[in-house]
Length: 399
Image (cartoon, rainbow, N blue to C red; front, side):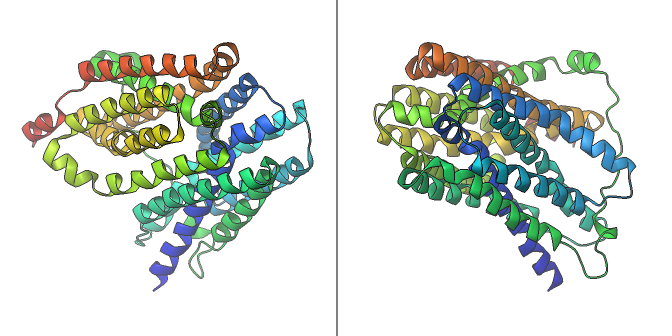
């Protein structure tokens, strides 16, 4: 019974965290455009937030490894409190000011930094023999993101983007409540300290590159595919406005894509066993490009919705397939580096998309940017076909 209660609380943490992520990052362009910022500035804000989070996560993790004064639960609570404070200030700021840019970057960075620590909450219980259903919680997070997008799209269209910081506050408060209550009676802090992880990486980056040459090309393919993916996500309101849509239409489109991710991810293991990991990677690459080309040619919201349906065979396949692919391709002591490099490639693509996407939108307009993105995506698919190896056969030989 206690485990069920923990599962519910942990699912609520993920639910409110991903709703917060949707309101902040998913609607960043809507909020900042309303305040009078240019696409270039919006792209810079998103890029800096991602870069700071990439450096902030290991820095905070290193501190947590060394200290016994702060539990993981309390760390997350403190970050949420700071987000709430910053969001309250954003509620009452007006105009495109430097102060608003700084506060937005800090709030977004802290929100992005939270993700691995929220994931790690379960491990503190696992080491004590208590199983938390992470998959269920993450699935609920995806559904929550989709529902939040739908709600915000319609509310912003009916009222104003000025509502968004109030959602930052409310969602952070809800997440804080469930984080603060996420413990077993009598184990408030002892059970939620972050464990030090054993280092497995033994190769230098240069040695890793020499050892896994085709894997490095796969990383290039990932950056190319995720560039247009990130451009569209970061500047989706501009894409939708270009074909006479509004924030409600954008919310519907995001909702559609997010909901369709769930069945694919849930059934991935069955598909992978029948089709093979190599083919799943190639399928995801092809449908990334199909989605991006369809978005470029879209002249109405129906075509955008059709493009969003491709998400179930693009992003929803790539995320689990890439994790499985790395686990089969690289040796065990290289695993951490391999997984981190794939995540880093996706983050790098997001940074490039945020910086270049905003500048290109201001200079060239939506249509030309989507054309450039689609071409880059097709190049990514070609690189994927060249680089992906048959890891399923490799795994069979080893076993």
